[in-house]
Length: 222
Image (tube, rainbow, N blue to C red):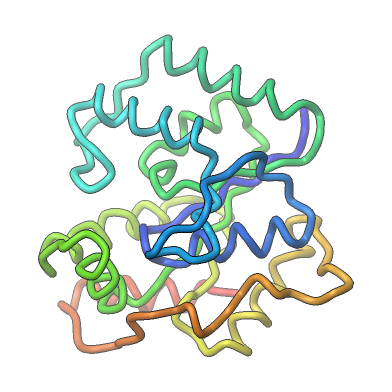
């Protein structure tokens, strides 16, 4: 069974950046979504995997921004998942999609040795980013942040990267992560991360419960 890495985190929390850096270090991601006005270096999401996740969430009565109470997996979803896994062959590969955080067991069932890695961002920054991209009101974005990051904390033995640190600290954390995943820093250094593309830097006060969750995440970060 090939080594597989799943990159997880709340939307607008650095999952694309982390995926790009791991790809730069040799992790095969296959064909991924290109750049957009809100993600100038590309989302690094496999469209087939994203579509599968969206179908599961729709069939469960929800969406990525309206997470369903129960994830309903049907046989057609399992068939598509297994076909995707087979399409990557025997090489080490990975995928990134925040939606996978709502259904990690779906992948672990087929890939019990799959390695998960998570990234998180200060809730106030996520609120600003979602308002800029999707027009979401703050309360909706804060509820989503709490949902996704609570799930992230529940994943055992998952290395965590903070996307709200300074550029030097962020790159240093990536360098600590690479050997954990069996990857090596490329000879030309890590160029995918560009601090100038990280918008919506803000750490204003948030509700105490979310602040406590954020402190817990920081305490576990590499």
